[in-house]
Length: 269
Ligand SMILES: [Zn+2]
Ligand SMILES: [Zn+2]
Image (cartoon, rainbow, N blue to C red; front, side, top):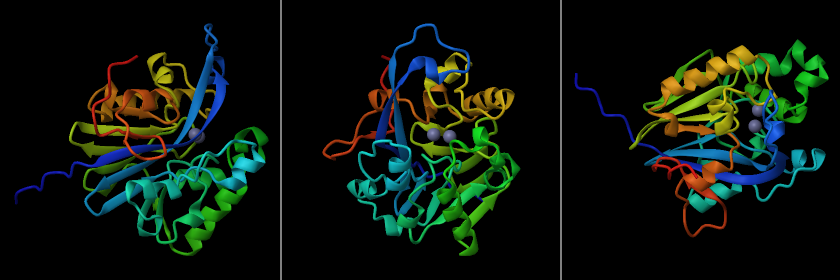
């Protein structure tokens, strides 16, 4: 039987918030050249024809006010600028349950949420008795996900899985116990959405992980896994790096920052 060619998806990174940091805060081994740097917050839309898969759900007003983080606009409502009605989204990948990736579940009334077994076990288990381990989780977001379990709207994955032809989930430890990156087939080859398996390009390039890390060895092994899954280093998209918007072509004519990850990035500035 002849194999169908894989679809070539479009991938969009939608920025919905940013915060100011110092580069020194971004590495477990401090950077000598401490400078101002932004941390951008994204959700990602993977699209082909009528198929639209959302990767992560960002955060909403609840976390913005409790953590005093500026939310520029709702990341779910922003999908409308790409002609996507949030109520039409059927599949949402939650890369992990940290507060900046797993809010807003109530704004996706018809979605099934895809998550790793290990992430739900971690976020509801004994490690959360420890303030240091639960710092980046918001209990209400975790409860919202658990409510979706009882509504039969969560699909659990145990390791790598194919979500659709050309869209693959990759379980990568390190940052949390059950983080999953997403590998997507595009016209330029396989692109990997790293999420927080790599916050910044520099975390990978310098082999110096971001300080929110459960297991440093697994994090570094995860960088190698991302590299092996992507067509080239230019096909790995870090989770929070402002360089993403500088390197990739933008969607013109929309009032929000959206980068086209299915198009080739510009040379590194
Ligand atoms: Zn995270
Ligand atoms: Zn994050």
